[in-house]
Image (cartoon, rainbow, N blue to C red; front, side, top):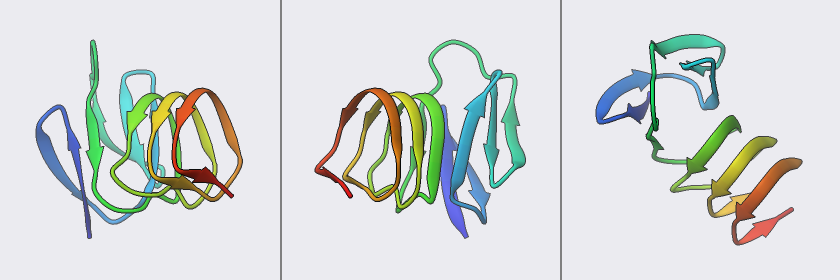
Length: 91
């Protein structure tokens, strides 16, 4: 079980594919939070399989594809579609 923290609220989840769109947060296709407004802060400890969002800071690696406007993370192993990415490496 993983933990995702959304604006200070911890939620247990079993997946590691995160999509944030239309003021909603999905993990592995399952809605975990809705009604998000303003600046949304997501914290996920560990490695992600994939990420799709506007802005993100990941304290871990992304082992799959990324579609994100601004991103800061360790390493990325998949394809990257991003405007601004700060990471150690893209493989």
